[in-house]
Structures are given as structure tokens and as C-alpha cells.
Length: 163
Picture 1 (cartoon, one colour):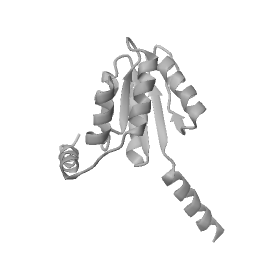
Picture 2: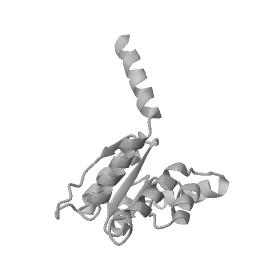
Picture 3: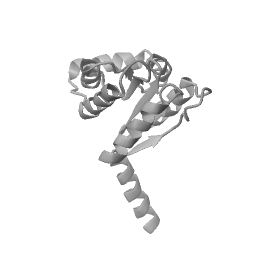
Picture 4: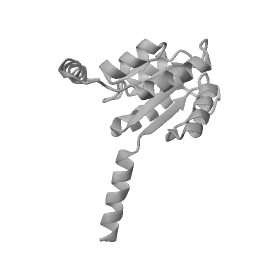
């Protein structure tokens, strides 16, 4: 009986806890470190799935790791960083259940969450300020999916397109 109770409590605790999965290639490593520092400071729970800042860090590998985790948990999100954010979006959106977009301004991150229920935010590690990236992350984490028949219908159509 204790084992079952423990498993139930453990499952409930982990179902309710939002996790932010992080990944970055060599071009996004420095920004990822800054995001982790910010998350530690404000108490955001995250898991770093890699990228060590080495030239051999390929964005595809981290896109797959983060997307796979996010796709398995409705209570999680992902943040991926490469040079442009674009490579991460292309790779991440290959995983069923993932809706990723590059965040480049307030409007793109808010509307991405509200209308498209974006569950992975991809950022630029090059030619974009870390302060602006952090601002966009904060906005994205606060924004929520507004739902509604129109947006749910569209997301259903996207899901049926397959991968």
C-alpha cells in the first residue's frame, strides 16, 4: 500500500510541476547560461538537456532532446537557442506534438502562445541582445493559450497534417 501511495503522490507532484527544458548549440550556449542563472534566481524549475558550448554541438541533437521531453508532458515547455533560432524551429517541429516558433519581438511571443499554443520557444544566440532575449522569455512564460473554437480547430488541422 505504501508503494502505491508513494507512486500516486510522486506522480501528482510531477504532473503539476511545470518544467522548462533547455537546449543550445555552441552559438546559444552563453545565452542558455544566462537563462539558467535567471531561472535559479526566480525559482523557475528547468532541466538543461545539453550543449556545452563546443563547436561540435549540433542544434539538431538538442532540438530532438528538448522536443521529445516536451511532447511527453503537457505541463512542460522548451527553450532552444542556436545562432538564428531558425534551425531549432525546423528540427523541433518534426516532432509530433511540438509547436515551435522563433521569438523575435513581443508580438511574436505573445501571439505564438495565445493563438498557436507554442510549447517551444526558439531564440537567436547571435546578433540579438541577451537582455532582449530574456525579456521575450519572461513575456512568453507569462502568456497563455487563449483557446477558443477557432484556434483549437486550426491546431487540430495542423496536428492532422502529420510530420
